[in-house]
Length: 291
Length: 245
Image (cartoon, rainbow over all chains, first blue to last red; front, side, top):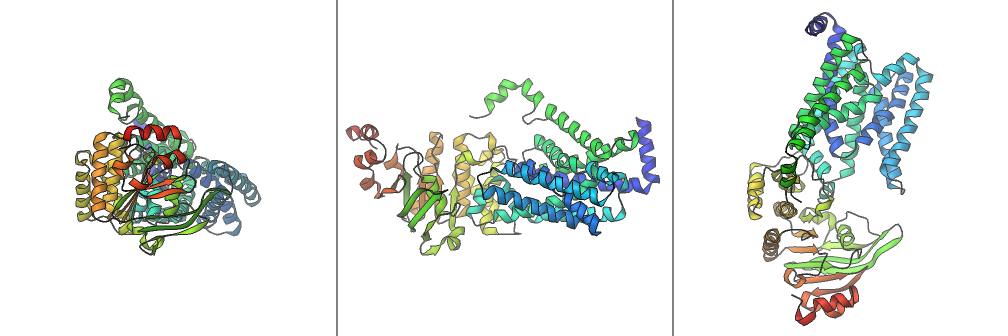
């Protein structure tokens, strides 16, 4: 174990590709932890999953046209978010059903377009991530997205907080809740595309939700939750990358499993609504919580 | 004065009420009562522009909703909120400053002091650091009244504030409502039962898919109106031996 960690660190010193992979993985862990916190607090985990799948046709089109993947992906991400909202608000169909219909259609379209555009190896990388093949351009793009995510949260913290906690209240003083929703969906698609590289489309939702859910178990403050989720996302990425390098596992599943294990540990030992504290002082806790 | 004219709301072609016209006076606490499903919450949501109305206008001292939106405080039903949200009592009350702050501006030190002051008025200073799920129903209701204090609004609308709360909270909330009334604000309270109607309110609106009657409580809260809107039995119980308080 110690040996393999030393090997990993030596390799980091020696190989540029591994350094790029590590830096990118950390940045993706940080941004998805932060945006993911708002996704889970708004009860939009399904939406996170949907958007991450719905960008696939955008990725394919970008390959075909030779344009930046971010542009193609954002276009289809926002289009999917818009269609989901449109179907849900203009029919009696509930939002989760609308999400199911739209995202599976986009995903299917993406598969067909990818098979027209590229070889199957690429599809495999898009689906499961290929962190070890991060280019300098990819790293630059990821840095820009991380900057955008942080600016978005810093400048709209108040609005993100109130529309997540109490959207009705925000509407009563005239705030346009829908505009912020679509802004968040836009940022979410950017994060999704960055995360494609590290964990792949299928597991992006895990990076959005698991670190945020883990942080939620430890704190009652939104600011703390955002910071913790970012840190947990980064730690998962680093440890996952180490496993990926050492045992030659796919990077995406390795990172996601580490995040899940951190969640499992937190679920057992965290003070808030978790297993162990509840078992030990179950009755005392029940009495303390007011009816 | 809040003036509602000709207001019609329908959910997929089934009208909840049609052509509602009613006035709410400044310096009065007005109760809205009516049977379950009579459209009480729908009426206030339509007045606030939270749901679409088919026809009608709502004006406050002659201004349209958009013009007086920052002058409204709305205390919604507690059951509509996510009580697991990672936020404490102080920060919930502080959101009362958000409307007037607008984009890119953060609450100032003065806002934070006003926030503590509002918490003191509802006797919750000791609970400022509590996560909101760790409060009783009455304490939680006081938190949202404290937020309304911070909004410094001219029109305050409360949706069923007295449901399932303790006596201490009820007294504290009534005290705040009286202060608002004395300051000449317009206060509207949706109320689900008929207890204490004359103790709580100055004016009363009885709603049952349309306005049954409105005006000063003494004129409106009558056996005939209660019998017409609810039932003869209820009216008999409430008004037995002058029992209506």
